[in-house]
Length: 252
Image (cartoon, rainbow, N blue to C red):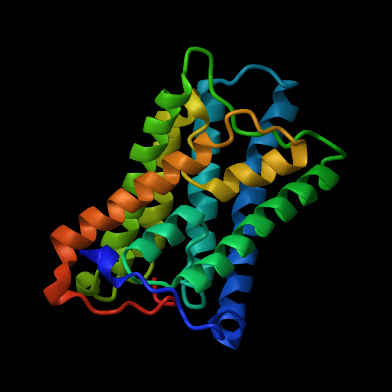
């Protein structure tokens, strides 16, 4: 079982130069991702005069997030692994691929990156609102939790299959591309219902800057549960104890 390989980490790990560099990589990747993803929604609102969400707006959001995540994962992959998502980091931790102390460092960097991106957007747009994630009419919190669990399961399962699995071989840009595509596809599915976050940091930045916390816990519980299930399922069935090799935290 992957959870038997969970590691706390050494006391000096959080201050190790490589760990600090990895945290900075996560910070800048998150700034890139959230600035483009959240910014695309703000641009759509400006063009439509804050009109109602349309199918074309949903497609634009999916494309912006898919492209931006592809880039954000790619630029961070060789330094931090290109997690760009606290849920992905949590999935890696559950699978024994990153220590708890290093995970906490990543989480701090990811959350700060999202907040900074939203502050930059608010300033650059002349004070436009960075809209927090919210549930659509008729969608309950538990409907949204299930959405977030399933969508994040798909995301972290993809991360494990293309970037963590020791049998993956040298697949170059396939992992970042696949990760970006599954996020874009999931936004087309869940965007009209709960915004399709799959990423607690992406939800955190807009919530902080707009100071809107209604149902915010949904966007933490769902992704974290989905990530943990994906890590356990993929590792147990396809990697296994006998074939598992420790994966360096800067290699996925």
